[in-house]
Image 1 (cartoon, rainbow, N blue to C red):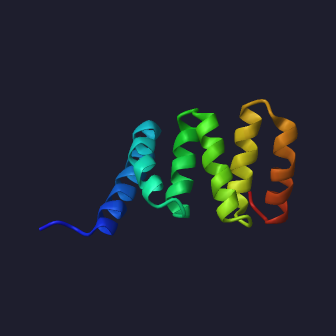
Image 2: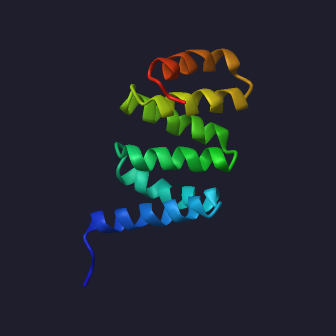
Length: 109
């Protein structure tokens, strides 16, 4: 018996989360990429993908995922802070400042 498509996506998310938790961000990103392609508005998957890219030092990809997340959820303070830190790691401090300010205003740590 085959499972519904949604169950497969959920299972993939859980598997990616496990990879990430085990310190394997590259594997987590590999699992998440098709999931995010199938569900581009899934904020949880997009956040985990961004965290995975950041953890794997794939900063350009992390930036792209975080910009999409900020676009989907402009009041997500965590996403703003993570985007600012990603920009800083790419030596783009001036671009990071407005995102830090917004994260501060939203009460993000």
